[in-house]
Length: 242
Image 1 (cartoon, rainbow, N blue to C red):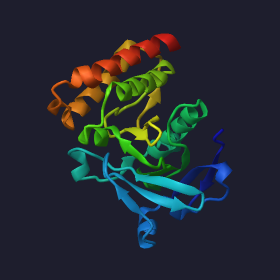
Image 2: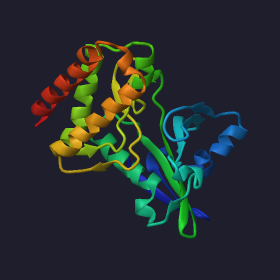
Image 3: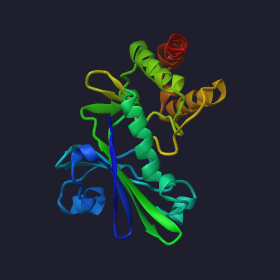
Image 4: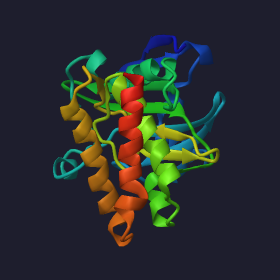
């Protein structure tokens, strides 16, 4: 079980899993790791993440950044509406719930916000899943088949039956590890909802659009080889869980 502990800082607050003991605020500072030559960049998402090796183990550090047009003028500042609603704290707590429920998500380690008047910046540190590829990377090398599709469909159904709505389910946020286990990443703006066909189908449609965007259309048999098996496994698992 993730047991959270909050620590006040000069400009904000850090939330972390008490099981790791004391935490150094520098663990949440990308600049610190880069100064130690201990940060390894990883693409994907807005600005990507960096992989770091903390005293508590391998981790992935994410600094929240804005995307789209607004990101050109405001890279990483958000409107302050309270600690509970800050991006890092909200995602840390959702991941804690999902992790404790046995769902395949990275374990949260720590989150923080740094407040400056009506604005704040945020960071999140999670356990790193080693020896894994994103679904986008699998697609790039053509390593997709009905069995993989079925595993992904079943995994998504496990989240949906518990009412977990992923705000940006895409090919970069689905991870396949060396044992072919499926993990879901990046629960920024995700939330728990009453299970309903509308938002569940919206999640799936978003994933399909992402797959087409990263090149699924180059496989003439993509639907038969991957998408239809994914949907079939998803609906079977959803019915069985219910």
